[in-house]
Length: 367
Image (tube, rainbow, N blue to C red; front, side):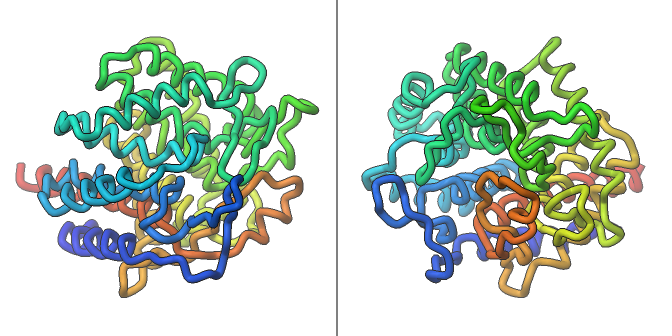
């Protein structure tokens, strides 16, 4: 049974746990310029923090709490006073939450950074054949490669800011990226998505049906449609992708409610961030009537798995660390475990969606 109070208490712990994250030196990611990267501390500017801020700003939308808004605004005020890293796929991720914050408040403090970054993405981000965004990141150029991560890190921002700023060309570019990535990454045999595709050799690398990469799709498709105001045939196509993926996901869910880091490999470990992303997408789709009762049940099972992996300090455990493109499946089985901001954020998205379900259940019981 959904307990609203329990979920809200855990949500607040998740926020506290995310803000408290600090790099402990266990892992080190150099940037292309040789400077230290920071994938763990909440105070860095990279994709884990970007996803973390997205979870936080979505939670603020849900609560309307002034202290959540102040937390987000203070983070951006502090970061924008520093020299920002060069734009790439992963460093674009923090712009998504900023676009939503600006869209809700219309605070002109944020507009110049958003406008400048959107233009840099459109004009400067390297492209593959067929004009896909090459998955260039802070420490790897990845020529000719499409990764499923790109859609969450870049396309959601373009859709959100493009719609809010009255720049339809940004939304159209985001649509192009979703369609192109779906063409090369969606596995027509299973309905799941491969981690990546390369035009240099034209193959899907290890053909890994990697869980968190798939979770970016499950969590991102409905949000993309919502943020970009996507309608018509594109919306129908993307919902078809979601239904096919969800059907496959339900077949592979573990009895505990989690999913393995390689979805169709029960020998790989169960992983919390992907499970949270799947649970969020399945519950949201069920609430909107896009998926049925089986998706809702699977989402609630995912919720229990995630709750069982949140420690007393509000830190999400059993989260796989940042994952490059694997050339064989063993690579994914060997990714180490490390608490991260994206683990916190995906759990926040799931629990906030679960609160909506709890509210619906209480409303139905009162009628």
